[in-house]
Image (cartoon, rainbow, N blue to C red; front, side):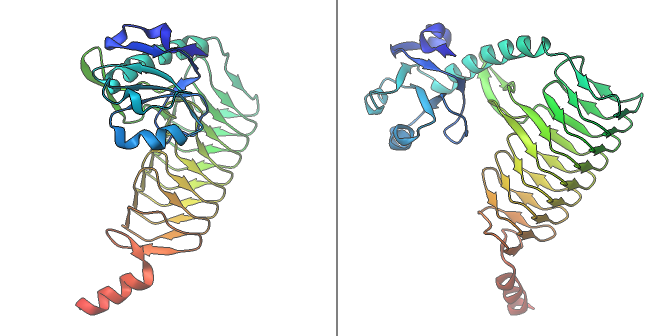
Length: 296
């Protein structure tokens, strides 16, 4: 745990109400003890009611809108100050991670061409790691997983911030976790969580070639993910869902249990349990078919 006062002066940060927080994050980050940036007063009610928030960085003209129970700092550019704090915390996280020795079960099979970080990796019994697989520090792989050639686990997620006055990819603090019996075909890429926790793939998840799973995605058990699917950050996929070839799932959505996303669909809204959606932008499948019939 750190305090806002630990970062006084960083990127013009000035602390008005000191207090502790666990980690940096966004309002949607499902972690307790968050320090978040607040750019506009219109989001203040949502910030004040979010129990995960412990500290806020905002502009001086918005500061009065922040609840008195929250630690508070001001900066001319709250996002830049937040990114600078996050970068420092990420560097400290890497130091701690370097102290974690790898734990690779003797029954696991690792191809000679695979790259495995020298620290912070766990691979469970009977898991198989194929040619040219890349596994970064902070990745945990359970028993009986299969990683085919070219799979990359724990890559940086695409999230930008101003660090040192320049636009940079924000360093990630979280990891990736694969539950038992996950199988990923060639060149699947899974980004690590951004602010903490893990990007999670549930039991018996199977993913086809060239799938991208972004930071903080949470995938339930027995989900099928077809080739070229793009699942954007913080998406939650329910148990038994099916994502068709080349589907795109917008960030922060929920795809329900047993839902089916059809081939090529672009999903921009939550999908309820056991619902089939189709099209760009995706709508319930029966409405999609009705529309097709009306224009043919």
